[in-house]
Amino acid sequence: MNVTARLSLKLAPADLKSQPLFLCIDDTMVSKSGKKFEDVSKLFDHAAHNGSNYLNGHCFVSLMLCVPVWNRNRISYLAVPLGYRMWQKKESKLELASAMVRQVMPEFHAQKNIIILCDSWYVKQNLVSIVDEYENLDLIGNARADSVLYDLPPAPTGKKGRPAKHGRRLSIDSDFTLSGEKAGDYYTGCRRVLTNIFGAREVMAYVTCTGKENGTRRLFFSTIFPAQLQIFCAWQEKAPLNQTGSGWMPYIPLFLYSFRWNIEVSYYEQKSFWSLCAYMVRSRRGIEMLVNLINISYCAMKLLPYMEEALSQYRNSSVQEFRFALSEQIRRQIFYVNLVQHVETHIKSMAVIKALRRLCLGETA
Image 1 (cartoon, one colour):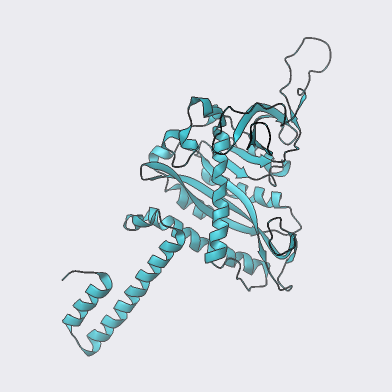
Image 2 (image 1 turned 120 degrees about the vertical axis):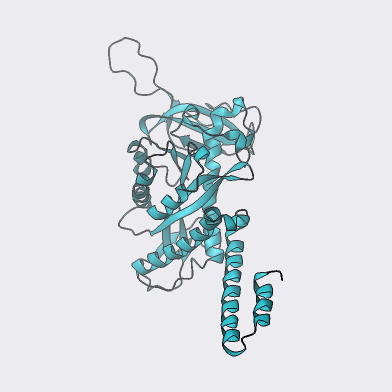
């Protein structure tokens, strides 16, 4: 993981070094029909489409790094999955994710802002407490809508007794004023709060809703405040981050949460086109090594177009398209070399060699 993170950091141009980096955390499940795989178990999958919410298989926790790069005069974030760890029941997924973050954080000691992006499963004390261990680490995450929120403590009155640790309890339905217009697909409200998850630390709470008066409300937390961010909004590739005016500045941490979707795209691509689920190895160690080997190959296809200028034309292509193009070139090179060796041995014909060069390499006469 550390080597991949180190290579990815080198891709960020000097003028984008001040931009925040994102560490996306999530887990994915791999269904297995066999029962002789090590650590295989019955897992709950809320997204299962097999008629049951349970499947027999493995669960992998993964970590993804998003680094800023220039793409057609816009700032785009290159999403690079750093690695997978198989979940075992002897430790929680939160502990596993925390260990992965601690492993790669030494690579980011020179960065100003590293932001963890995660869904509501990971916004719990076992993981969020890690942001207190590093000065440059923060977290933006979706949270359960029934999370306990408190207003900030009132000013000291000078009276006897211990000062209040927090204010009154808040409700996401009545204590958040939604914006007058939508940002993207949602009306949004925000305020500073205290919550049991983060202890005495003040955080920004965001509430989104599809409708002004009714609709399902979602809750998000951010340990980083808008004033602490240095991000070039006008140069961003995607909306609504690139459309923010001064009135939308308080909502920038919420807009950054959209980068978490990159890890879902990575899961889809690796499962559909890279045979991530097709392993037949039975031991846990063997499975982890094979899954991470597939991930390294996937990362190589992500990084190469940015590391080699000759391959820059594939920066906007999918990983699968670049893999196919690269494999085609390798096949043609092998075909060309084998034929030329045969021709030189038996025919010694320069005319045939030139014809093969034009055919395989596109050289002009």
